Length: 163
Image (cartoon, rainbow, N blue to C red):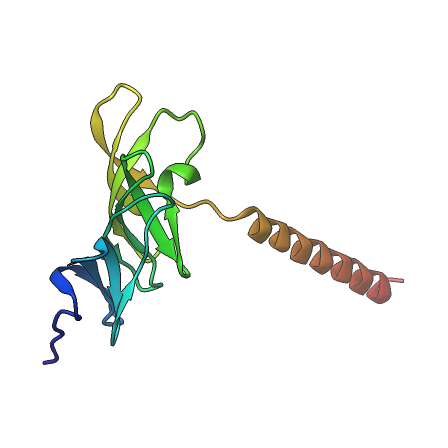
């Protein structure tokens, strides 16, 4: 069994989740930088903060190394976040504008990228949420181009075989 100890300057460190690749997430508190979400895989990596915020906590990680949690914002609110490929995203910026929801904490993420957490609904009540990612526009465009190319190839093939 391996163990990890606190890094220099840390007051406390809390682990919350581990994936099948032995990567773990949680949060760490230091004297000088406050509370920051971390990803641990052989060494601890600070996941950063939302723009203007001063703290973050990670709660879950999937096998694609996508991390979710909660973080402070510039206005002092708490927002749910997704950390992916080195960038922390405010989940409120990824939902339809005008939805009336404020997503305050993301508590888990599965390998399909589905995220569950809690938020405040348009009636001002705290409720659970489930976010299911949509295919990106570029992915759909790419699939459409591949489909058109396949169709063009098929038409040429049929024209050559049926003169």
